[in-house]
Image (cartoon, rainbow over all chains, first blue to last red; front, side, top):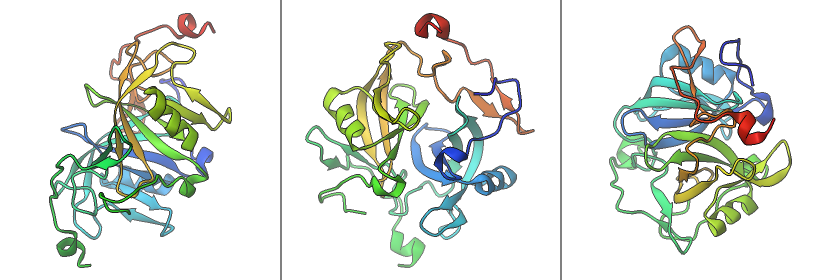
Length: 133
Length: 133
C-alpha cells in the first residue's frame, strides 16, 4: 500500500491486467453493477466522465450505454487501500443499468432456502425496445 | 442468464474459480471492501452468517475479522444478472473494515488532478493495537 500522500498507481497485475470496478448510484448508494477495467478503460472513463469497461467476452473496451444510450456519468472515484479495486459513484442516465431492464444488475436476493427472489423489483424498460432483440 | 424462477448457480469459471464479492454497509450503503470467493468461501459465508473470502495471496479461506475480531455479519445477499458477482449487505462489527483503521477500504478518492485525496476520513482504530504489529 502506498501512503495516501505519495504517488500511486492501480495494481492491474493481480488479475491479468484487469481490476474490478464497482458502480454505485451516487444518490441512493445502490450497487448497480460490477465490471472490469484495464488501464485504457480506466483512463477513458476519467477522460470522458463516462463509464468504460473491458469486456472479457468481447475482448474490447466498451462504453456503458453505447447501445442503449443509458450511459453512466462519473460523480466520484474511490480507490481501496491495496489499489486493486475501484468504486465509481455515478449518475445512471435512463435510470436502469441492467440489460434486462432493472435498475441494478443485482435485482435478485438469496432467500433463506438459497433460492433467488425478486422482491418486487420493477422493470424500468423493455429490453426488446431498447436493444431491438 | 437463468431466469429468476429457475435453478441458479454462481459462475465461478470466468475467473479461475473465483467471483468478486462486494461488501456494503447494510445501514449506510457505503461500499466497505471488495473480496474474492470460491465456492467454499461462499458456502461458509451462508452457513455461518459471517463473511469468508478466498485469499489469493495466502491461497486459503479466511474469515473477515479472524484476527481483529471485526467480523462482518451478513444481512442480505444479492446476485447479479450474469450470476458472476455478488453483493453482501453486512453489519460491520467494530465499525471499521480496513486493516489501516478506516471504516471502508475505499477511504480515498481521485481528485481532479488524478491524485488521491483523503477528504478527512477519520481513523477508527489503531492498527498497531488491533494487529499487534
